[in-house]
Length: 242
Image (cartoon, rainbow, N blue to C red; front, side, top):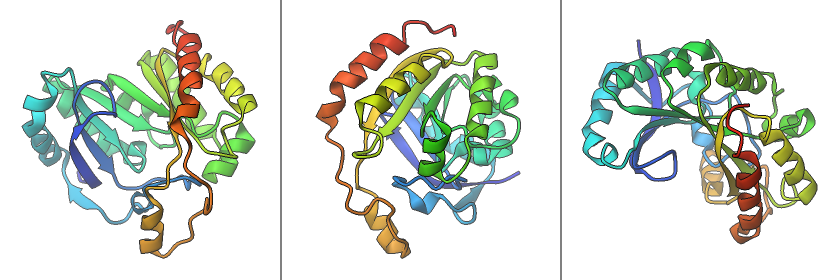
């Protein structure tokens, strides 16, 4: 079996607890308006590798992530877009006692149940919590992500929730209040992170010769999210047994 990775980060500090090796898998079915990695969207391309070769490479970073309580995070693209490859990598890492995390929007395919057996933490990227908004942002329906949430609930895997806040799109109080109510229904939420929209990936669109969907939208001022971040963590992370 082989899979395709876009890139690998050896000292990730924001993709789960501790210092982490982060694997960016190639391919994503979504076409989010604010995607800052359009080069990971296509399922063709990337570096081909086997689970065994990738895990052997990842274990070289163990002296960095073990002492910090870190581990390995699979991101993308969409890691659930290569479910068989992801599953085999997770199995090998768990056999080595490594803490595993998947950074996902839940828009994958395959058997979530098996993957979640070998996952210690889910970083769940909430694109939008309502169907119309989800469709507008991603270009797809949200049935896959809803199925994923129910699989996480059944597997009882802890979750950190992430949500990108875009000026004029997802930054109004009504949206954030409704989002808070939705997050409160999710299983085992330990942390909420409102992420400010940025334009650091715009040059990638120019390089690829494709139009940028949010041309002219300014970056989100992260200081404006501080109060909301605090409120969401206070209200949504109290009950982790939903």
